Structure formats: C-alpha cells, structure tokens
Length: 171
Ligand code: PNS
Image 1 (tube, rainbow, N blue to C red):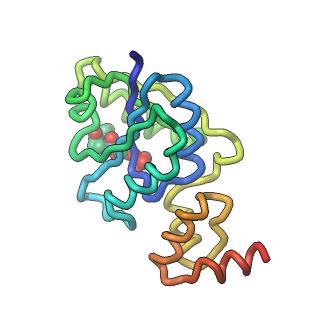
Image 2: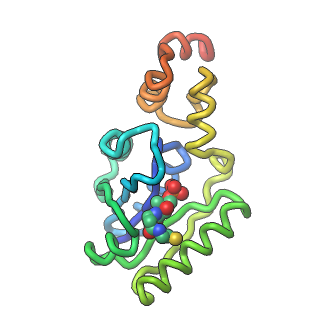
C-alpha cells in the first residue's frame, strides 16, 4: 500500500493546496495531510480550525486522512511509517526552499523520507495562504482562492460580513 504525507501549515488551506491534495490522492493509496502545529509561527487559524477546514474540503475524497503534528516532519513520518513527502511547487522561487527542505529531510531521516513535487496547476500558481490572508484582512475578494466556507471564516476573523462582501463582488 503506497502512503504519503503532504505536510504544511495550511493557514488556511487554499485552492492551490486542494489541487495538490486531489492530484496526490490519485497517485497514492492513502494521503495523510499533516497540519503543522509548531508554536514558532503564530497562525491565524488554530490547528484545530485548520484540520477542520481540510476535513471539510476533502470529505468527498475517501483516501485522505487529516491530522496535526508537532516537531519535525521526519519524526512524524517515521512514527507513522511514511516514506514520501508530497509538496507543491508554484514557481522557481519555491524551488530553493523546497530543495533545501527535501535534502534536509532526506539527510536527517537517513534516507527514509524522500520528497516528490507536484507542479501547481497554472491557475493556482500565484496563490499563497499569506496573500489570501492579506487580501481578506482588507475585505478584498478571496472568493476565487478558497472555498466559500473558508472565505466566511477568514472574513469573520477580520471582522467583515461574508454576505455583504459576496454581494459586493458578485452581485
Ligand atoms: O505550508 P508551509 O508553511 O510551506 O509548510 C512547511 C512545512 C510545515 C512543511 C515545514 O516547515 C516543516 O516540515 N516543518 C516541520 C519542522 C521540520 O521538519 N523542519 C525541518 C524541515 S527543513
């Protein structure tokens, strides 16, 4: 049985993440979406909220499991007998960081955790959780970047009314 982990912050999950999840779910028997719960980054959404969002967005994909983890990805992978990490590559600018992370994980795990990369579909190549949060923080249009239920949660965090903004942008 081929299992893989897709680790990330997912703060929050965007259509770009969902694209990688859907495509990876067709390549592996089981895909574990691992939501990082390290305290160093101060996320907008709690780890419980991020897990819930991913569960809701992937509930029609049977071979996805969503869980949170703390510490190093290689340790979580070893505990769960996972040997492949999936990551999305949006542009050349991602490459350096991703290559370094993949090589670090490979070295640290003594070769036990390898990485595979999926080129993000072009329509989502510009997307990042950070920019989605920034747009939402100013009441901008995030409806093309995250599912509606995530947009609602995002706008709530920043004190905006979801229905008002939906009407403003889409009539
Ligand atoms: O969605 P992100 O923030 O790009 O995901 C980064 C993530 C969570 C994959 C990475 O920061 C990670 O694996 N963190 C756990 C700590 C770790 O293993 N660090 C060593 C990798 S160089």
